[in-house]
Image (tube, rainbow, N blue to C red; front, top):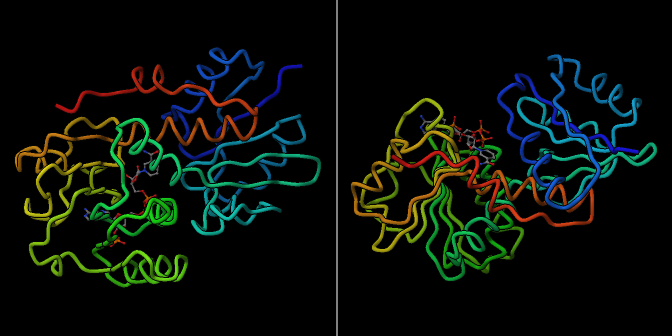
Length: 277
Ligand code: NDP
């Protein structure tokens, strides 16, 4: 019998997850059906209950339901606990196992696909929302030389920095700052994990944040050359990337978790890539 999976969100039409998982299933010979569920605002639990009752085996979760899924789950993996949010669920009887694969997907894209080791690098992350929270431990596990988080609302950056310090007993220095505290410092890797690119805005950084040979990575995907990537390009940065690989890699992690097979992501990344021009 075909196993059923779906992504739930609101809105949901834009989601690439059905395309990605259907491609993974075809490539790995897995017999699954992957659909979209438009979850009513305020009606997440009922929508998931109905999907489970109809035989659903697992779901991806996208905005605005990642916190609802956190509350709905019975068994939270450490990644979900740390992120305070859930992006994948697996249903087994009355148990709801929950994960957050965004952070591990980002790290895998950078280290494996882009072949850009994080170990020993000076890393700057812009933004202190859910994506940064999820990426925090997977990034620190790579042993960068330092990790600096900057955010408009400085308290959120400070909170995440304290959390990061606490989880790895201070081996990697982690700082939470405001944008005006960067003081001309340069970094080997700069991640735009703010949502500024969704509205074509530039976070308040200067070109000096990009050290020689730096990687500039915008987690937002499908927007071409965002103002952040454009600034990097104008500063002479040649390693530019958006979050399409992160999207594909978090999906591959969920697929592996559900099906026990790791799909190759290259075809999907190629299919979904919007040129950075
Ligand atoms: P959140 O809403 O949780 O956080 C948004 C963050 O962006 C906050 O830190 C906010 O600052 C900051 N911000 C918003 N607008 C601006 C601006 N104009 N200038 C500077 N900072 C700004 O979002 P998420 O963390 O969930 O997502 C962040 C981005 O990452 C999104 O664009 C999302 O699409 C992308 N993403 C990509 C994924 C992928 O697979 N490629 C997966 C997950 C996310 P403040 O706190 O001060 O308001």
